[in-house]
Amino acid sequence: MVALSRLFIDKIALTIPVQSRSLQHGITGQLQNCEENEIISRASYGDLLARYHIAYMLPLAGGRSATIQVLPRDDRMNFLRLEFNPNSRGAAQEHLFTMLRGIIHSAWPDFVSALPRARLNRLDFAIDIYGVHIDRLGVHHSTRSTWSRIFGRGGTTTGIYLGARTSKHYVAIYDKKRQAREEQNRILRGERTRMEFRSKDIGTLSALRDMPNPFELFTLLLYPPCNPLDHEHMHFLDSCRYRGAQAALYLIQNRRKRAAYRAWLSETCHVSWWHPNAIWDQRMDALQRALGG
Image (tube, rainbow, N blue to C red; front, top):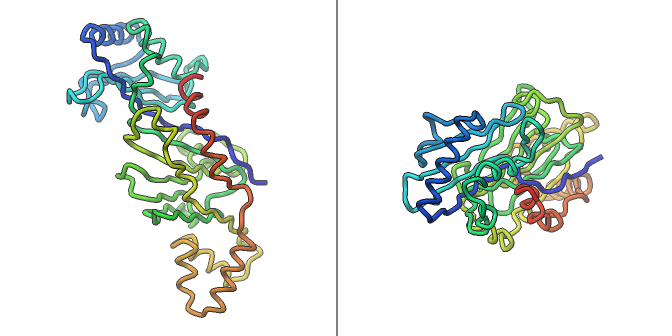
């Protein structure tokens, strides 16, 4: 049986302006105190220091971490940057943003009141599709072609990217069960496909209310298992997976056969559980949960 998770944020990066020099020094000093008390660890090299002079890592359960960066190399950038996965937890299962807020609060008691001025440097909205392996999922996006598709050893699809991964907006769809096993050493029950809409430089937090619904641009099909299919339909589905259903149909020159395959797709592969507007209506709740609400 197919089921959808509620919409959630899988990664968020906030940059927050700090205009007062004394407050900047206070925050920097507080982070140094936390480092001395081994609450956080300072990065001495790497990409985290490319745009900020100082970067710290907050260790979390399962070997994960959150990032705190201060003192940008470009004066036009906001002084403080936080990047984290809201679904991660501390060693005692504390909410991650609560931990970050606790670190900064000692130097900046009004930190939470400054969040409306924060800018979303990165935001990944995600939803999990339970009971469906990615290889059975047909995906059509109205404005983005398939940029890349990743296959496993057995020839099954393990990941799909729509749009260039270097762009400000792109879509990642992947086999979450496989990823959890290989990267996190976790065993998930049942099939699970994750769909993520990844964005950069969205603007302020309030801009999220007026942000267009990215999930509305998707059309999903659920392909049947290969076992009961005849050889011809199996090859047609392989073509759909490789180049998309519309392109696969376009390659069929015989009009009657093309119409028959289109009708077969509509009848056999239609999904009734995909409701983009209902999914997108959850975005502010997802942001509130990510920020400890």
